Length: 511
Image 1: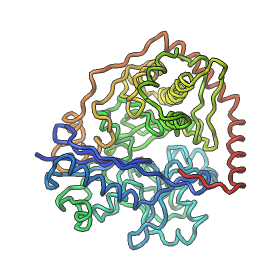
Image 2: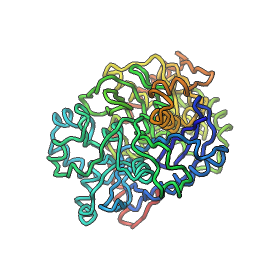
Image 3: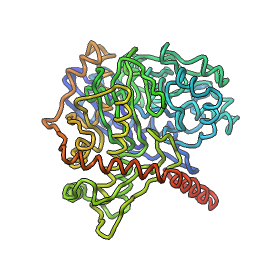
């Protein structure tokens, strides 16, 4: 019997999952951590803490699963996208990684936009230029930490650091590379034109592989730390959205998923790299060449519900689900704009804050909680609309993340999207996708597609939209958009002013 291991490097935790060849989960081990925010808008993490979490969860998963280490045949990775890890000539991390949710590089974003112009951004980058992506973060280091910039010899993404520690090889995959703003998706290579124009050395960027390709084996040092044999095959893996798609069985054009994790995404599979003229969605490469995902991404999804519940004594989630279910669609006339940490799709504004509208004397915790869920779902529905404008449609979507674990939230999503939803049996879809990729690279499966057929299963549950509820929600959805349009400038000014006042008081925020 051979086992595959999938490692999912998230923003707030790392999870390791072990499955057998039929997809039965043998063990899941998790390690939580917290990124640092030494100043407003900053989000960074010491990569060595990721490695410590990786070692810890590998050892626990093997032990708790009752597995002999030599039975592990392959390891794959899923990782938070866009972040920047930089190494020196000795392969040592120079500074903390700058994460996808970091907003410090606004000046560099504007410089890139001015230097290239909108037409060249559409032609070359094919994506909106936004803070937290690898390229503007790299330029921020050059502008603000020149001594660190001089030390850089290698640039890659968060999950690639774990692969490097396991194999000694500096590599990345096409999906993560295409989400850096420095990649040429048409020719499937790092963009000489982009990097030359910005005077960034091309030799810093690693070779790229398909998600299921083997990139090395476990080194002697890593074998001692993890307890794994040196024979284990390590595959390239991919960005979390691609890996989650694999773990949901969403790998063919016409298929789509909606994820409510800390952030949220709507992802459509595509056979071509679609360019949105408005540049408010993303197009990235998928798990193999000539395969793409088109997605809308919101910064705040499950994060909003977690934040809301943190304001109260310990929450019983089952009880809250019951109370939320008793509230009618529309939350008693309350609308929530879910912009706690700025927004990507469709607003592309890191300087936004969240807001409740319509609160009255009859508003209670259950109404506010439901409004939070509806607000996040409305934001994801905007992403679905934008993708629809590009010709991407789906008759069924797979729901995943924390939003798929709440029955009322699942029903809200189906009602708002007006699309039936199904849910994968294994909740850790990104880690499962990484394990499927590991099985492909280790030769257990002939392809990612074959691996999905063998492993991915769905719950005996289909959530169908209530057309009456959908009609009600569309009235609120129009108000959701109107409220934002009317208050956008005010929310932006409030956010900027609040940050300035915090800085003046010398407040240091933790992540």
